[in-house]
Image (cartoon, rainbow, N blue to C red):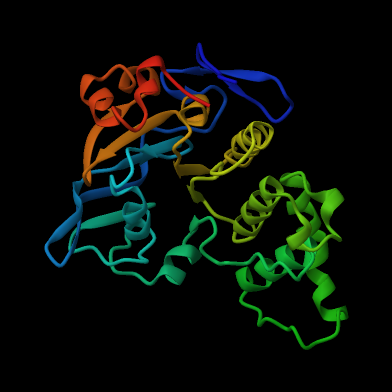
Length: 285
């Protein structure tokens, strides 16, 4: 399945138009919510990320793509301060967050999906989201206490499960969920932290075609009122969701712009040869 001609899927199952690389009707301004300058990471002489200047506009879905080994995951780790940069700066929402602790960055609203490891297979779906809510509110993980004081989180937890389409699965253990639904649960635990900006690391990796479509619709839905930066190998997802994309190769920015423009770039095509030559055709499944 491919969405083209400037159309993207909506939560209701229909489509909405994109104009100039921006979702029509979304709250998009010209300012950047996340911006890096000279971002560099070296590991004992090996340069994994080199002089990256990334600018993510507020209210957009921005894709970060590139061949294997391009530095995408390292870049994500730098943005959320799981790794300290060798050089360069990171500004988020008007603040220099370079060198902050990951927990401090998350409290500011810049949250990487899966960074809190809040999906426990032996707990129910509801309990997993409730646990994330406890952390978001600074409460201790009261595993040993009775259910009664913990039920204060149930209402909000059920709202989040409804947002990601998991209401019917609330009483199942997370271990019983199909893979695609488990990724939806991970997104729900991320939403519990009330992020202004979400970083999603390959949200559709390993999914069936049906699950990919479901997660695309989910990302489109949760992006309303937020900014999303995602790493994704599935170019159908990238072309269908992203307002802008940045292409990395060998740790450097190779190209940036709307997908339709970048996919025609000769250097981008060359970088993908042998790994994903179908970029010249626009997208793949």
